[in-house]
Image (cartoon, rainbow, N blue to C red; front, side, top):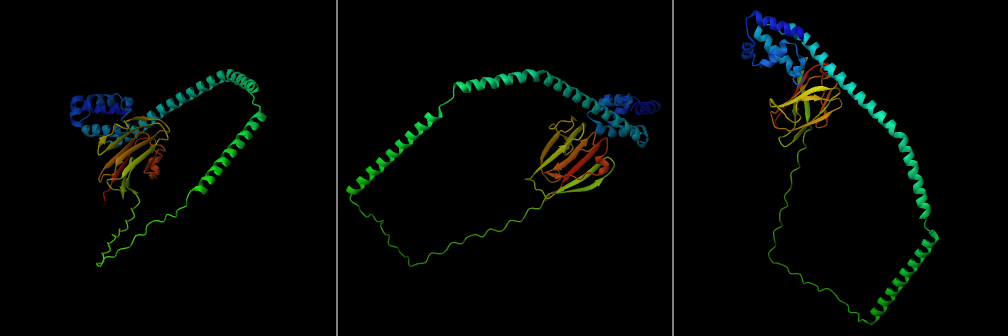
Length: 313
């Protein structure tokens, strides 16, 4: 990145342009231009996926062929991304070692406490042991009493029934009435069978070395799109819907094994852009269906853009 910044600064000075003049031509901020000329790639840690567009605009303003620095830019982004990935892995390893040492320190006292608790429980059971023979005797007495009470109730109800007069109560029989004029039979509406809804389809329409474009079909405006993103490595990430950046999830670094869900209504012509700063082996599902990402993009250790266009019914 230092080599690229020095080249752009030299060309700017040769053309007699100030940083303010370049800012007006490219619409880049003065801070962005200074960071580029100083080779400070860490300034763009949350915008690595857009650094390529920043440099391309700068090259166009100075009449420089962007392809001359394209390879150096990709190498700089890859080296920077790998550096903070290694730092994260080392931090995780130190945390695991600290947890293991803590468990070893408290393991021995814990075993002694468990033995003491077991001995206390045995002593308590010995002092409060119940005489099972007494319990069985009491249970037999209770069963006999319940049987005697039930027999007395049945005998009492039988004697009461003998003295009562038995009357045969028959329900009144209704005399049917017939109308001279026949009543019309109401028509029962026949429901038309519903058409089976087509299964959602995800079709790749185009791709190149840095991006792939897809079309989502067979959804209506009432349906919901659930985009599940699984990160196989630490990566900067941002989401844009109809060219507007979302605040949830907010742009930033997503750690290894993070799973994000982006939910949007399937409004026709909606455009959803996923921008990865480090793509290597990341995966995307839409409504549980795996998105087929080209291998050239899936194995890329750099920035990748995935665009999904909703097709209306």
